[in-house]
Image (cartoon, rainbow, N blue to C red; front, side, top):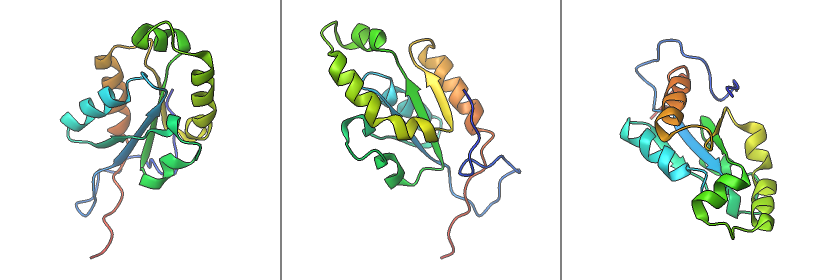
Length: 139
């Protein structure tokens, strides 16, 4: 799902006095945050994972002031396939609650259970290519 945001302005060709987009990736444990962040970094993006699912501070993702927020959705069945059948429903539910604010503000939502890493990366790169970098603050 693509969602525009005031923080993810559409491209205008990019200015020479701009910095790279700051990209935050959030999602449940085993959703593929580290994998997607690694793939984006290898392509030159300033991406980082936020351990929002472990924090009771529901707006933790905002602390890094991302230009773009990517949310990786993953159902409990996929988490259990990746982490083991014993992964507790209660842990998944608690993470779901902690991720509510991030999901509501996500610029891009990807279902990591339905796409390969390559496909998720391609979707993210396609979306990011439409986002203009923020201007670099004056020195």
